[in-house]
Image 1: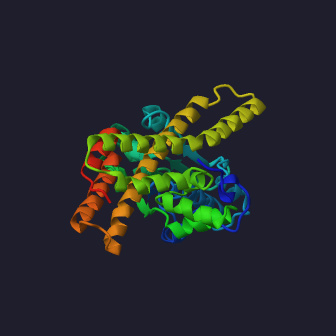
Image 2: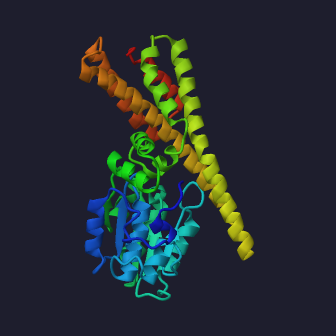
Length: 359
């Protein structure tokens, strides 16, 4: 979603862990595993928590034998170009059967130039029960030279058995101060960085888009003003929901230039290499998923800002009816949880706002 950091782009940094932000505990655990790794690790954490960057960093450390960003193997692994680091991304709505078979086949092959092969399996929370069953034996008993790094946003029922065969490493949403520091370190102004961090919900990828979004402050101000407009009427609720939806669409549009640059970069690489089957459809599908996720995150941001209005009224003693304000905060948190289940967004928001008092 954003431009690559030094570690992800292959530029030599101070550590293979440079691109992993705000995950000190996870990094310490992984550093302790480098000398004697087990066969499989499960990185669990929300999007934008830099678990993807941690996967490349861990692979780099395993192949280089430590925290050596200038080591050839580390440089290639961090750039996603090492022949013994295989990154598997899903194609379509779920990880396909053909991909599972390819994972099993590739895992059985000997490393090309290193003592180890590292398989990074992305978005495995989308693995089907059938796929999990097919892959289980390979994850349980891979060749001695193969190490699996499985990435998942959460551990659903289909993933429980596989999770039990892996060392689990937890990644948390990144705290605002760490995101702010990362953005400032990337050359952004402190005020813009702090504002983007506050609206990012712990997602560094989202913060990197928000920090250059000129509409961020206006959207947050509009969300903060919405509770005061509620009057219990359906007309007002419908109007406010339409405004929230429009603002979420506007926010997602900020991805357009980033996605255009990704497609242009792909086309440049294809033209230079004379490739056939460029992978443009896979890239466009990925971008569509990113837009949907970003838009949903903006709805979460809207609800979080509104909850903050009621919470501030309680803290400062300005709520006309404290019990109603407390109920509003609870209802908004329930709606935030419901967004995880891909509901009808308009109906969810309408039912919520009809139940909220004016602030």
